[in-house]
Length: 81
Image 1 (cartoon, helix red, strand yellow):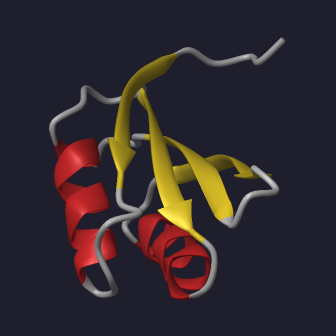
Image 2 (tube, helix red, strand yellow):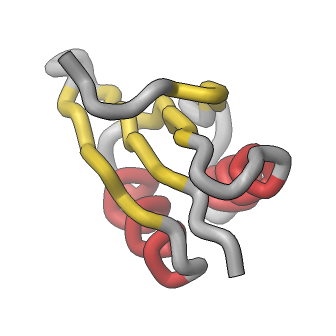
């Protein structure tokens, strides 16, 4: 059982970097502080760049889940300023 509740999900499997982070950033900005976002993304550049960029923005990475199908789910908690 997860110790967080997902407030919203954004699927960025249909876009390429750097648009992947832009879409994830817009989605998390729409949430309230403390809310959790699930970012569904492809393996490769998104998995390398989106978690790093979210952390650089000050958000908390809770989990990176390998779905074993070439996609991942990044669970991110929004941290306010």
